Image (tube, rainbow, N blue to C red; front, side, top):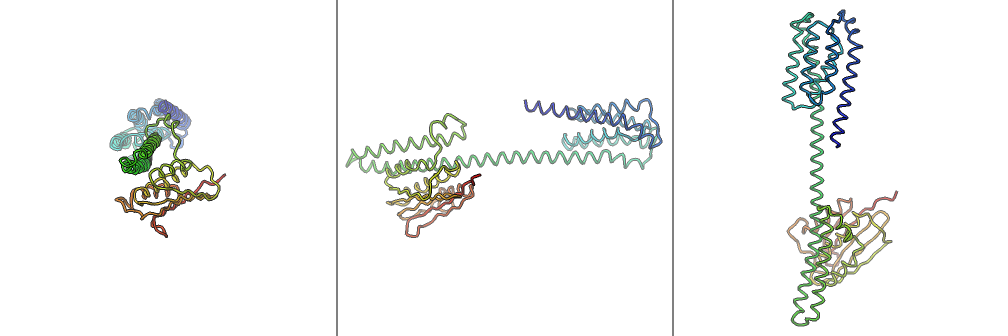
Length: 375
């Protein structure tokens, strides 16, 4: 429907151009003849009318339009009529071919039109001689150059649009992959730790193993729910949005409970007045905490983790420290893919991110995320 509207809009514009050139031709041909000391003839105005009106279909059939205008213009000049507004129609026809057809096709068509137009230089009722070739050629060369420039600019814009769409798609895929990494990585790490506890207790204290198995069931369900919400972006499943909330700092109590069940006590400290954050900032802050605690679970050994949130007027700061043995360097850049993912999340929002050994031992992750200024 949009394409049809666009096509009708182009047709309407071309019809207006054709009528405008028709008016200019009918009103301006006689004065042009007077200025040049030449008179018009019986065929003058029919040729002017044909050359102007055929431009109404110039974008639908550019080659046919150029052929008709070239034939009318050549006949007009060979008959010795004055240079006049009919050349404007020829200008528009050449421009259209150059602007809307491939370069090779447009060049062949333009060359043929030029040869035909130059016929009046050597034959005709009023032959200007070779001196007339240069101004006649300009009526082909100039519109051809303008049309080619417009076509190249339009193609460049289209390529840029495609490249931008591809870049946005790649960025979205990367974002989803990062979300899946965080969700699955944290869930599997917690499940693994709880399974180890269950296996250890199963033979000696089977009644206590039930608690670990229950924690595994709860953790796996929460991870699956969160994963479903994350993949909604790809699947465009609106119903999934209604089944689980978007992750954010409001889910820290559940995260803390999950880690405690896996054997990692988590202390949460909040400074400043907690408030609703922009969705992107809230998600990024939560993912920093989640991934940091996952690393504690994986690498720190027996440890206690502390999460500190500081709300300021223009930013929110997140700090996660632990009392373990420190980060174990992984295969990814900067000590692991998790750290690289956290850094990308934070810097993409204009924040800052640091991670490294804590001053008193263990490991420390610190991120600041700017908040949108209130209007």
